[in-house]
Image (cartoon, rainbow, N blue to C red; front, top):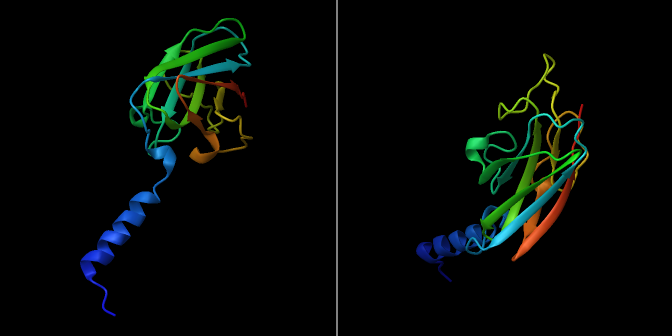
Length: 153
């Protein structure tokens, strides 16, 4: 039996495309909302920064490679981030207590974060950010809610 090279290539291409991570491809038009309730602020200075990622490119700090990013006001020891008009799918979520509003995670000379941060699913964090898979949640329509507790090192 002879295998046609063209059919083999098509079969391989189909298998490759079907094996792509589901979180990398939002599935529907932008009709959903993601509501992120963030707790554990140590003060009311600054803003809450929130980013959604659909791929590992830039995860978790490169805002320019995020799917969406916005800033939200802090109310006491909590804040709510709301992303409207997004497609259903899987999104990795990272949040930051941007105390000085410079739109980045400030670190000390040992590279330890000086501001609070958190991830969807509240994974345990030691010295490095969790993998994108550990901070990914499914978003369905009409809305999905999640809660993140901030970490200060």
